[in-house]
Length: 306
Image (cartoon, rainbow, N blue to C red; front, side, top):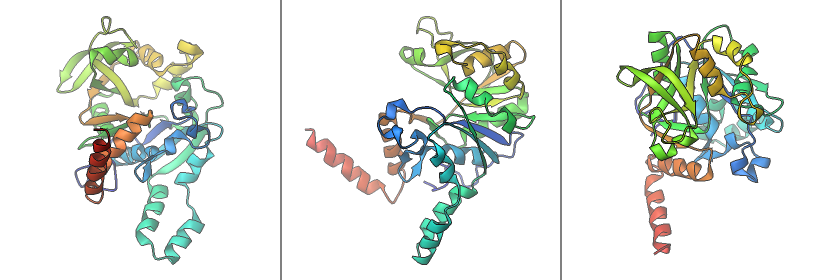
């Protein structure tokens, strides 16, 4: 596997579409990773040797995005430090002759143009996106949730941008989910347009399996027209008194067409300890320099349970 974009298995999976900016919400408390998230932002927890946040940034860059807006909160200044240069570290690595490590350290700061916006209080995903409105030019933008790591031959965000460019409307990523798990997702009712592309009729947040309009659930990739921002400003607080992104999407759907793109590949929910472990194992098994040791380790651990 390439040490570049996490899911790329083709040499130059780069798009040059109309979407140049991505918003990455990273202001959450990371409660499922407490107590470590008290001191280390969840988004910097590693999948092997890189934090989960870098994987989604690399996907965005491979999709043609050049500007990354990260939504942070109090206590998460280390997110800015990670993508900034560390001159002292670079000098020490250069003097030690550790050129490969030096290249990896420098590459993180060169991936894209980064800016940071602080969300003053936790008021929901919709509010987090809305805090970035002054950092987004008057054009379409992407939203990427760092909890979702998607392994695919083609960058997931690149596929959404392609659909956006062809249809001219906002696009949400969807995947097929087992009926019993639909109550954890926003679920869409759609009209098929072409292979894996649909037009939204409606969406329901966390329906019961019996009430779900389909088995297509929204996952953490979106491309929006700029009108979403004015829609979010008019979106009333929903569950927990928060401004929900799905409520904003539902309101936008009343004003303009929205599309859905079914993703291919495998998605890991790295917002949970078990999901992070599973992703780490899959990435390790995909690397030639790690696979033999990891297979041996798994076999040893399994034998101890017998």
